[in-house]
Length: 211
Ligand code: HEM
View 1 (spheres, rainbow, N blue to C red):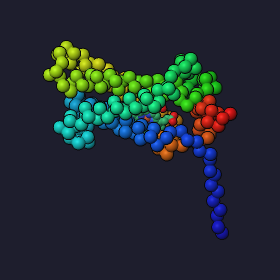
View 2: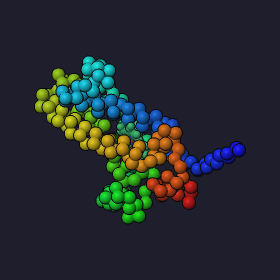
View 3: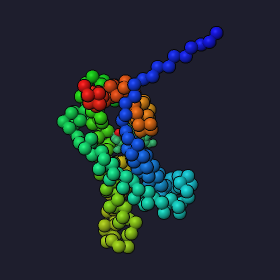
View 4: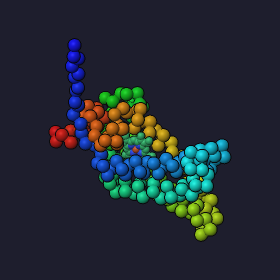
């Protein structure tokens, strides 16, 4: 007896262009390389990480160049995405009720547009940290050209930036994969399901649909 297969094709909505996706993944890869090689270079307990990143000498050479790629990527992100990331009063309300978001009480939160308050906050952390990493990184890359006091401050500020951007990136990776199932498809194939869009970004869904 033949078994008929029923395939339900869900409506798909365009979320990220090919340019946005390439920009995201190139910037993300560069950032992750910097983050892991940075930990390996700075902390002797984590030197073993460098074995997976091309070896100690290679990682020390590539780290600043990957930083340059990350910074250029982040500047392009600012140019392309900053308008979408402007924080509104509703986003601040969202952030002040982040506990409700974590416990799944979506009805207590303002409806999100293309990005919610948490995503916008992360985007600004990436944008600002990229500038800070770049400026302090240049001083650390060519220390002989700068005052020793400035070099020392650069190391401290580079590390603080790493702690903040690194912690938020771990949350971002969790949210983009396990935390909000379905998100990753937008960043891989460019499209998300209508159900996902309606649930997570209802205002954006209505805008796209012209409702
Ligand atoms: C394996 C690592 C990563 C995964 C799985 C991931 C996943 C994603 C996904 C699924 C989105 C779209 C969210 C949506 O449609 O609402 C996104 C957006 C974004 N990603 Fe990533 N990402 C990763 C690493 C990074 C890194 C390292 C950076 C920083 C350089 C970054 C920066 C951003 C920014 C600024 C956005 C837009 C704002 C936001 O949605 O939070 N991502 N990412």
